[in-house]
Length: 430
Image (cartoon, rainbow, N blue to C red):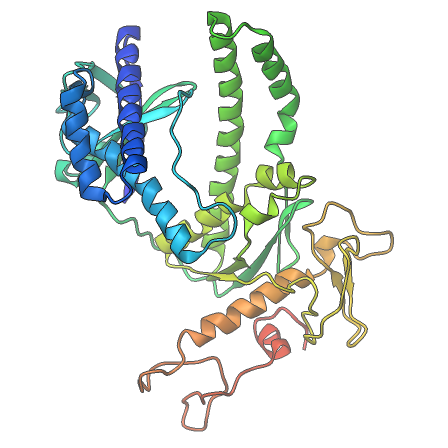
């Protein structure tokens, strides 16, 4: 599924109508959540039917297209279903009980296959429901002529701080070809550096929120000083929202470009399966972790991995910094210890760049040595990728990570050690 976006251009009266459409969609979604709270035994079909009842009860709710009302009911059911799923899985902490959406700077309304009409040149869109929003010009770099009209499954109108956008959900699989590079990489994300790979390369953490924090504080003060409900407060809120939008777009642009570069440059990309939601509970590091946007970067890596056909492996983060990447022995280190020194084999590597402290004097620089955690992540990933081909159904063509027999077929249960795996990929000198 592809999501193509274009900015809408219209008059101020048309923008007001779009606000009413978004407000109506939010009302239907909140009403469906309230209906579920009062009747816990209802399901998805009952909530979908309740959207039609709301249209008959409220004349202004009936102006919205029927499929747009159903899409709002589906949003309500998604939050309800997620709550049920978390309860069944016994997710620790809060289970995500459905909440009511409130008036915000951003919002959206979603159409399915009716309620809108594209022009012949597909450069403008007309909304045909009873709100009568009219025709909007669309500005964007994507050409909808490459896709058939029946491929457009959803049309979503999104309100942001800098205007209104139209998103088209197109039923099209994105696949791109690339030349194999015969290289693998392990990534260890951090705060001093955004990530450090198994080859010793580092990428600086841009810290967009920290850089824009001074301007954000100034704009937030202006909002606080304005009288609630006044037009001046509304203007101040819009300026503050614009600054937050700029920071979020900078962060997303950085993550997308970096993830694409990493995926194209390697055949296997390994990274830690971090629970960022639990990590941000640390009040001292929560802002820095959120500003780094590790989850967004991981999503981009996984997405481009599917697009370019690159294997992306998430490995458990347990003891990746403590274990020695050469001999495998566990070497206990505190967070302040920035260099891995193994007393068993004598390996000296930079331990893990995720801490907030810099290496002590005399420690080897990060760019001149392989990082211990990144090497462990890569080693675990290589073992995981090898196990995906282990014989389970008697197929002799399946391969596993092991030594070859004289007949040329790999043996079952014969696996390489950590040092042998790393040496075979050129990460340790023989």
